[in-house]
Amino acid sequence: MALNPIKTCVLGVGLAGLTFHVPFILALPELFTLTAVLERNPQTPGGKVHDRFGVTTKVYNTIEQVVNDKEIELVIVGTPNDTHYPLAKAALQAGKHVLVDKPVTTTVAEANELGAIAKAKGLVLYGYQNRRWDSDHLALRRLLALPASSPHSLGNLLEFESHYDRYRPGIRSSWKDSAGSVYDLGSHLLDQALKLFGRPSKITAFIQNIRGVTKPEVDDIFTIYLHYPAGTLFPNHFTVLLRSHILSVKAPQLRYAIRGTKGMFTKYGLDVQEDQLKAMPTVASISEAGYGKEPEAIWGTVENLGEDGATITKTVWPSEAPGEYAGLFKNLAGAIRNGEELAVKWEEATQVIEMIELAYKSSAEERTVVVPRI
Image (cartoon, rainbow, N blue to C red; front, side, top):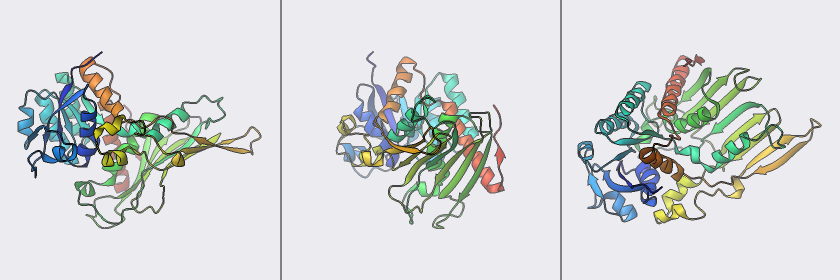
């Protein structure tokens, strides 16, 4: 069923806006129209969007101009973390649907308030968790969905290890260096883990500033353990280990290491979409055959234990389905126009913020904390 394109305004034209939001709004003209952007201090007549993509749209300088534009139906918030809540709140109160980049807010209280406003007004409020559409994550989900009878099944999972490591000794001229790695990369790792395994019973976290190049309280590495008691998901105790290290000298970096009673899955290298989006000459590249396709050199490996309990068989586990961040935007459009179920529910995005708050509490108090039941 054809949809009337949703008139959209993107707030912010930094990395998030120009790499993860504007390209998909332009690449899906049957679903969206880029009506405006918010750019505080444009340096050229058409602003950064015109400079990058050659398109002309309204350029606003204040949120008041955005919310007073009755033509705008959807507002995408791609600004610094501490502005997500006030900007999203202003848009919702003006009757606009809202897509909020991760982390959706900096506190659970803020996220709950936004959720209540959206519900009261009957508006779509969507958390931008695009990494659910990474090619390696899609391959992982396919592996974990195998029946126990499959020769590639990992059996009952014992430990799930997920990384976003980098080697970056210096700082960038970006607000992200003052936001902290848990709110930045931790939002992705926590979202993927919670979607796969649900709410843990306890959290243990170690959060530090190892480089000493920003404010001491701004973290650049973390290790977060999510604990699932025996009998919750598997007969055994199950642990999720989420890690990001900023001084990891490795190429390609470890992405997944998943241990089960019948096998292990190991994966190196990251999804290619971010690099492709930064380098692509036009948004038409998003629709080309090679977009989101992971090179075979970084496909994962499954090692399975034979029936003799000694022989180990190694198999390449391909990332067959290309990464597709466009899937998030297609679902968003369907939710706004046709009432389709949200792939990323606001309650899930809020739970990520809750786990971040508990992780900071665990690290600060140097203890394992209990996750409240709901």
